[in-house]
Length: 197
Image (cartoon, rainbow, N blue to C red; front, side, top):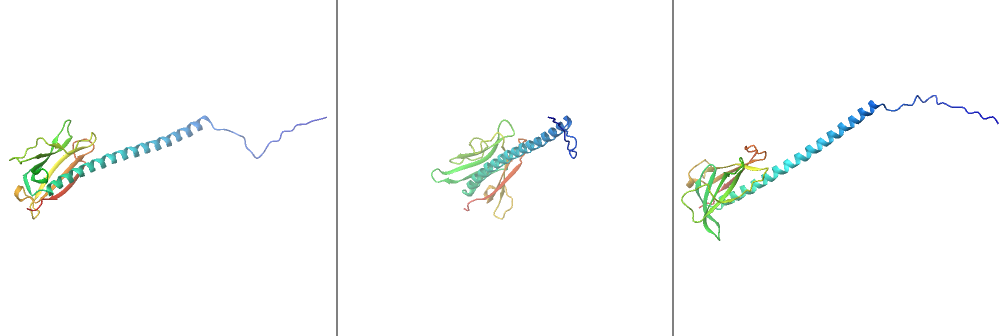
């Protein structure tokens, strides 16, 4: 018995070859670069979301304080002392407590530039306003601080006035510092009219 083995070759298929080490390294490097870019974009998006949430919390905190001060202005008919950074009102804010004075001011806390807004309540009203004592309206977040509190005053025809007896409208501005550089990043403004006498 005679057996013959013949080898057939496929003439249409060219020589078989694999990837070289350099080609594999280039492909791996390009894949790593793509993953690095995706990871960086994700971390930037997470950081931006965190910053936006801090800014929103600071704005909500300042709006609540503005609303509190505006409601006190609207509940009074007398401004006792009007300064650029402090305000003292006299009136009956709470029927249980009777007539009292309420003052609002910002005081620098340590470490600077953090400021804390205070509300001072006194009954009966003393003769002069001071920027001492009172209850903190805002307990400063370590990442957010009140950088400014200012007041502007207007008479019945909306002209600026410094005379406490002629004030009918108070503009309250709160500056919020979110990046801790001591300068307000946001300013929120609220107008409040005094109760007519």
